[in-house]
Length: 295
Image (cartoon, rainbow, N blue to C red; front, side, top):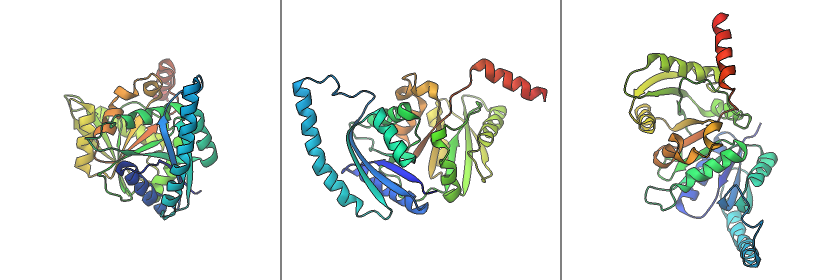
């Protein structure tokens, strides 16, 4: 199956870098890239209740998109893999779902601005919107990250079991194509937690995320979880950091304040946000755990 990457395209350095990264990754897996240009990522259409001025502004935006599309088609001609161009004014949930239906992307790719960029936090916001819209995996690429195929993967995991969301399942194929090593990093606060490390490793193995790889387990102690993950990424020389986005965080409007959002803003390495499947109610989890112990 050919894998598709949808990259949020533009003409400034972060977007250019993300496009190069997506092109390199797609070339390694013989995939396809969609260059998607959107002025905004939002949950609600700003023009639904627009007055005459708002509708006029919308028409102006649509007219300007013609020039944008032409420039993107020229950009697409320079790609090394088959490339499609999509231009929208707003990346609304229904548009994201339509793109997913038509292209079945393995992930969305977003360029991460450098530290001095005034809209640095906007990347985390866009990532949160995509997760809320359809639980899509999102890869953020820092502008200083090397454009290389990632072979050394790091996943930050905790004690809690998880299953990948259906939209994230194609990533197993992606990892099998280029990954050569996987480190499971468990970060604990203040004290060493060997039991937590073992549970984190079991959670990753049970999820099927490791595929054919034999994960290495490493524990880190840090007062701040995001700092611990960044330390793990540097220590293991990871090419790619993977973190889990549980539905209760981004559906509860907490994503912009979460550990994941802080990592997106601070990590010098590409970060892949993996949405998990709907969590079972706590009572069901406990019953499942007791049943497992009884076997």
